[in-house]
Image (cartoon, rainbow, N blue to C red; front, side, top):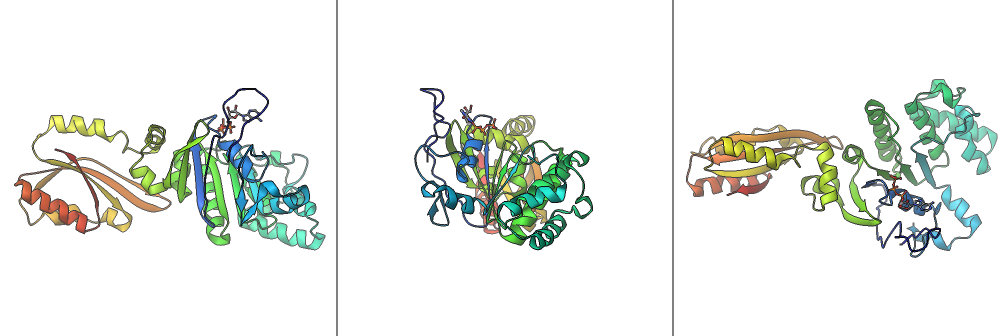
Amino acid sequence: MQKVYEDIPGRVPAIQQIHLHIARGEIFGIIGHSGAGKSTLLRCVNLLERPSSGSIIIDGEDMTSLNAKQLQVKRRKIGMIFQHFNLLSSSTVAENIAFPLKLAGTGQAEIGARIKELLELVGLQEHADKYPNQLSGGQKQRVGIARALANHPDILLCDEATSALDPQTTNAILALLLDINRKLGITILLITHEMQVIRAICDRVAVMEKGLIVETGKVLDVFLQPQHPVTKEFVGQVSDFATSSAAVDSNVQQGDKAGTIIRITYIGAKTYEPILFETVKSTNVTFAILQGTISSMKGVPYGQLVVQLSGAQQEEIAAVIAKLKQEGMDVEVIAP
Ligand SMILES: Nc1ncnc2c1ncn2[C@@H]1O[C@H](COP(=O)(O)OP(=O)(O)OP(=O)(O)O)[C@@H](O)[C@H]1O
């Protein structure tokens, strides 16, 4: 699809040609700098913005071919939450959540029951009768989430949903989104400019720049092997990996230049196993750790070690590397 805002003649399209497939049930993140086109892309999904060309296919149905009535019905199955929450300030929490249910013509008794369920889901049972200005940012976003889920949507669009929140509240809201995805199977499409949001909950990510997707893939792959300069920059926000080469260079210069330098990547339970030590133990190979990090991606631990192997013949070092690979490690020889 493509989107050109028509108001300024000759301007670059907000979305150049983009082709994106999002699988049912996944959490898909779109990251990019300001003006990259993320909001435009997200708003095209539920047709808050109409693409200039191309189509938006949801469950086999092209959104751009629906008439106003059909679109209204289809939109009920696409919830949306916003950076600044967009709550009705003169309505209570319960009334805010009831709003989309009333629009859908839901009966009063059913609305009452649904509000109760949703308040429980987002942890706001005690706050039904409060007004938005009596709530914290995190609580406001919980109301936004409850309202977005009111009509049992299949898809939840999140427009910078945690950008106005402090880090601790951000983590709590991300945990709630992950919980909703797992419990209810809702597909989540989120946009953000923060790589920690992607790392915390996304399965896959697309990196946008100037209206184009410049890189896309599984979050782990993108983190461990970012290709595009913009992706490298975003990964550098949260990871020590991107800055590692300079640190490694200086460590190598200070130490023994002989030997082979490798980068080992550990994922899952292996992160905590002494595989490197066990592998070299019965050989002549010695190792020096030049750099190491452990982190977590969607709750799964992963780590990287940059290690200098020396003290033995090249063949023996090669055998150690082969053994590490056999153990399921991802090993990259950096030098020589
Ligand atoms: N309603 C609009 N009318 C005209 N131009 C627009 C409109 N909305 C966005 N644009 C332009 O389209 C381009 C992409 O904007 P968009 O808001 O989609 O980017 P973004 O990546 O979401 O940025 P941000 O994080 O700052 O919101 C920008 O050049 C922007 O100025």
